[in-house]
Amino acid sequence: MDKIICIAGPTASGKTAFAVALAKKVGGEVISCDSMQIYKRMDIGTAKPTLEEMEGIPHHMLSVAEPEEDFSVSRYCEMATPIVEDIISRGKTAIIAGGTGLYMDALIRGTSFAPYPATGRREELEALAAREGIDAVLCKLKKVDPESAARLHPSDQKRIIRAMEVYLETGQTITEHNRRTQEIPPRFSPVWFSLEDENRQDLYDRIDRRVLKMLDDGLIGEIQSLLASGVPEKATSMQAIGYKEFVDYLLGRCSLEDATALVQQASRRYAKRQLTWFRRNKSIHWLRRAGGEGTAEILLKALQYLTDFDN
Image (spheres, rainbow, N blue to C red):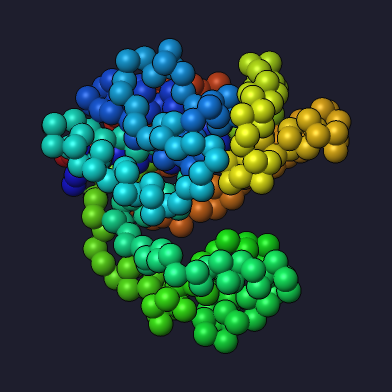
C-alpha cells in the first residue's frame, strides 16, 4: 500500500480537524480535495481551514485558482498528483481530505481525460444550446451515445456539451473513454476512511449551525467583495452552495432569512448526496461518530484500524 490515506465524508462532518489530528500522528501532509476550496478569496463560504486550524500541518491545493476561472477534475488531478508523489518521496504520508468524491476518485485512479482541443466545436455546441436549448444538443448526443444521454440530467448543460464535444473531436464516445479508463489499475493504493454520524440529525444540526457561523464570520462581505472585484455572478465558483443563494439576497431577489434557509437546506441535501457517493466505494472504512464524540474519539478509532491493518 502507498503511504496515502483518504479522508472522505459529507460537509460539516469534521474532516478538517480529523485530517490535522491524524497528520500529527502519522507524519502527514494534507491535500485538500474540495472543488471550491481551490478558489482564492473564497474562504468563509467554503469552510477553508485557517492557519490556526491547520496547526502547523502543511496543506496543499488550497487557493490555487482565481474565482473567475473554470476549474475541472482533470486540472485538479494534474496539479495534485505530483504533490502526492512528492510527499510520498519524502517519506511522509499523503492525507487526501475532502468531500468532492469525483475529484478524489479520479486522483486515486490516475484517470486519463479526453483532450480539450480548441477547434471551435464546443463554441458551436454552446451556440446551439443558446439558440435552441440544451435539448437540441442532448438529442444529438442520444444518437451517438445514448448511455451518456440517459445518465446526464438535462440541467447539466456543461457535461452534455462536453460529452458531445468528445465524440465530435475523437470519434469515441465519452462512455467508451470512461469504460476503458476503469479497466486501468489505479495509480495509488490508499487506506480509505469516511466520517459519518450515527444519528443523521446530528450532522444536519451541525450543518445548520455552520451556516449561521459563516454569516457571523462575514460571508456576506466576502461575497460582496468578490462581486465588486468583477467576479461574474454566473462564474462556476459563484454557483457553490452558500454563494449563489446569498448573491440572490444581495441582488434583492430574496430575504436574508430565506437565503439562509435555502443554504441550510441545500447543504443538507448535498451531504446526503456525498454519503451516497462514498458508499459506492467498498474499500472505505467508516468511522461512525456517536452522539457526543469528537475528533479525539474518531482519531482513536482510526489509529486502531491502521494498527490492525498493518498487522
